[in-house]
Image 1 (tube, rainbow, N blue to C red):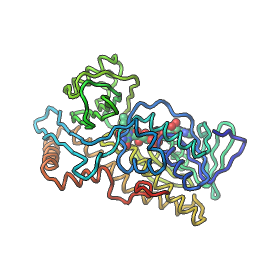
Image 2 (tube, rainbow, N blue to C red; image 1 turned 180 degrees about the vertical axis):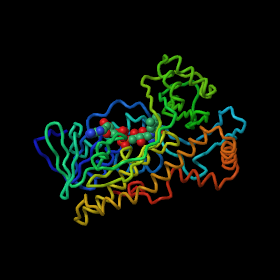
Image 3 (tube, helix red, strand yellow; image 1 turned 60 degrees about the vertical axis):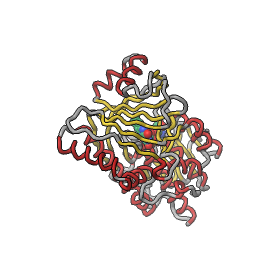
Image 4 (cartoon, rainbow, N blue to C red; image 1 turned 45 degrees about the vertical axis):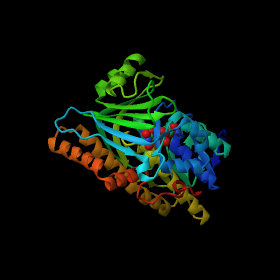
Length: 402
Ligand SMILES: Cc1cc2nc3c(=O)[nH]c(=O)nc-3n(C[C@H](O)[C@H](O)[C@H](O)COP(=O)(O)OP(=O)(O)OC[C@H]3O[C@@H](n4cnc5c(N)ncnc54)[C@H](O)[C@@H]3O)c2cc1C
């Protein structure tokens, strides 16, 4: 950690020390960029993330995955169960990673372990870090100034990795489209009596999915999407009552359950910034886009932002260009918009088909799952797109250095 003498300078400042900001700072440092990370210690995060293949490759390439490996469980199958009580119910569908030639779709890891591994790697690479929050960000034609409580930092480019309520997004004058869903996600981790066999299960209900994702040992993480009143009520009951409730909702699939400490409650929304970069400020992760926790897309998208931006900045620096110039920011926006938009639409459509009582939509959803169950090439195409997007992957996600 570095202290702030009244004024500091770097080529690039990354603001925010969540997983996306940390990965971005590491990737830039690994490419030889003069980078400063402005990041207070993050709050305890007991959520887990299903890291898909490209994210795991990027973490491996940057020397982070080694420290994650023992904390992560492979995800070899995904089962979807229609647990609605509607007239038209979909058949159960099972996806296996081996059908698309993979050992696993990805790995599930607790965010606290992922963040610790990233922070340790950043420290090992001597990424300069100021453990403080940015108070204000202003840009001019020559650079960007970040005000801290006890000084200022000047850089060519500021990367806003400061989450959904991004100060950087506001500072860049970028507005966003936000849609709140009538749903909340309750999260917790559980130990259970029966093995999960490294398979995830999604029970689709009228209020959203209940998803059980494997953790190492006989443990799983739970994301339970509910109407807000029920989610609030469940968040207040005792550990034993909550474990029994999840066991009931999961039809005792994993036997008796015991809740681990640390629950989370998240209001569900989708939000997309109108631009991902402007006025020497580029947005990554939830500062740029928020998607509901359905289909494990949010952080995987954010890591692709970080890897793409690091690559564009590194290329610009090799050509001795200004890393905060407008054409660099426009290139980043162009390269990330399609991926972020497609994922948002896919998650939104999936979520809305669960929520609707409109019979034709329920029928269409049932038919889609029926076709997915029966038609191999369709299943495999969907699985491949879910794990590795068709859009061009940044070098890090292909196992190449930045
Ligand atoms: C219930 C749930 C389950 C999820 N599961 C998955 C999953 O399985 N797979 C997946 O891909 N995604 C998942 N997601 C999405 C994922 O959690 C987010 O995409 C991810 O946390 C976003 O990371 P981030 O680094 O962009 O933002 P954050 O994690 O929000 O980090 C932002 C950081 O910026 C810091 N900050 C804020 N303001 C300032 C400031 N002014 N100065 C300095 N620092 C600042 C904060 O302290 C914080 O540390 C899930 C989300 C939820 C709600």
